[in-house]
Image 1 (spheres, rainbow, N blue to C red):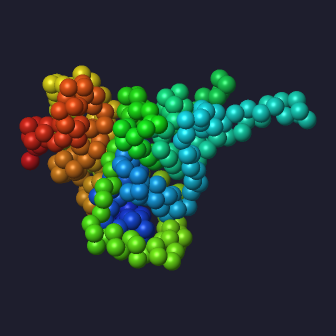
Image 2: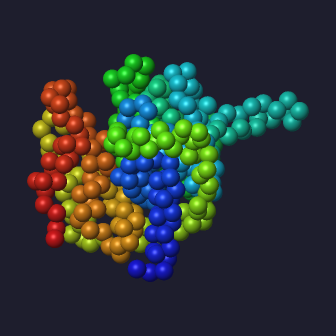
Image 3: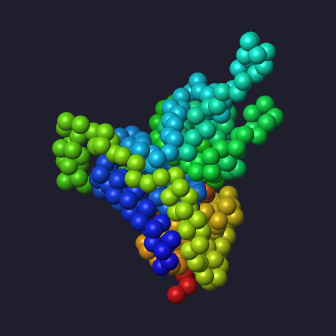
Amino acid sequence: MSDQAALAAEVFKKLAANIGLVLRGQEVATRRLLAAFAAGGHVLLDDFPGTGKTTLAKTLALSLDARFNRIQFTPDLLPTDIVGVSVFNQREQSFDFREGPVFTEVLLADEINRASPRTQSALLEAMAEGQVSVEGQRRPLSDLFFVIATQNPIEFRGTYPLPEAQMDRFMMRFGLGYVSAAEEVAILTGQSLVHPLDFIRPCCTAEEVRRLRQAAKRVRISEELLHHIVALVRATREIPGVPLGASPRASLSLMKAAQALALFDGEEFVHPEHITELAPPVIGHRLVMDPQTRFSGATPEALVEDLLRRVPAPR
């Protein structure tokens, strides 16, 4: 491994260690979050309340020497509350633009499915192109712009399912799940007097993150694995009961995330195991199942795992 790749892998380890000080028993979620972060994607944390979704996002933000903003999504939230608005300056007789919370490095979109679809769509351009268009003018966002959105299951009252175009902007969707009884006791003990978040300090700079992302792009991936990724994604378009399969954006996301995960593991090239590990959280949320398939108990992630068994990986 080159010196630059070794330094990037060290940044990965420092961030994972910092997160581990606050969240116990969430090593898998941490790997996925950091892989998406290094790959330049965005993450949707989808799980029940109280499992640590917001805490995970805040811990990553506090671990970086970068700007952090949080938006609490509610039914009355407006698009201008996200991207900003022009305010008339009576003294200067001109309009001054006031930036919204989207102008940051790390953005926590908390309970994103509690806002209306109109407000949710305000993030589409920002997540896909790293810019926002306000009153006919394009305004660029930070090159490190990273969205961590949290979502409660859509069965809960007062929520709006995210549209397909919005879901496709997220590189990964995954949950944290419940930890073991021993780890839950450790959480209670660790928070009996103070919260571990109070002691989290930045462990890497914005420039280190930029180098990390550049190193992830240079991780080699073979032609055979590229064909395997495309075969997996194309197979989702032929699953019975799935009228809308994954798009080419899913292929790109899976490739980039696998490169970042390989870097995390100290590898110089992507292994088939990296594809297998990331395929469900990268592809699953992009599938649209018909009602009959959904009511049968099938999940998108389970369908992708079945594809992994039927589409052999190169060796």
